[in-house]
Image 1 (tube, rainbow, N blue to C red):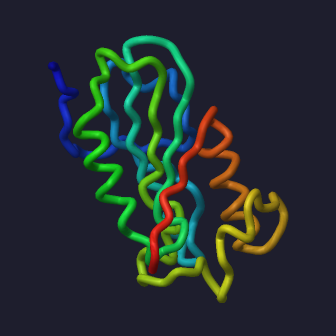
Image 2 (cartoon, rainbow, N blue to C red):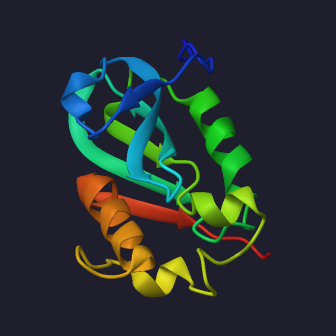
Length: 154
């Protein structure tokens, strides 16, 4: 059995998730530009993409929607070690950490006591949490035909 070549290399920096621009029969690591912080730093969502040899659906996996639910992160990495991209029909996209602000401070919530789950799908013109959820939903989740969200106990 041939396994995919799996290594974490320098991630490609992307502003939009365009699956067709990523190599087929390969696993790519990317950082999706989501927003700028108040200090002007770029906030990026880490992604892993396994694009198969054959066309097919887009299967999405998200983890760390709550910043302290970190068990899904190694599950995603273990899964990607086992993907056979030369036999894969379709694409698997994993958004490794959805709640970057909460993850960075080991907090379940996004900011200001807001649960990101309760903000989905967000609003284009709302407050910070609304816009964050809107961008996650529209830049990533809308690309999926199927979605599994990995939740764990805090």
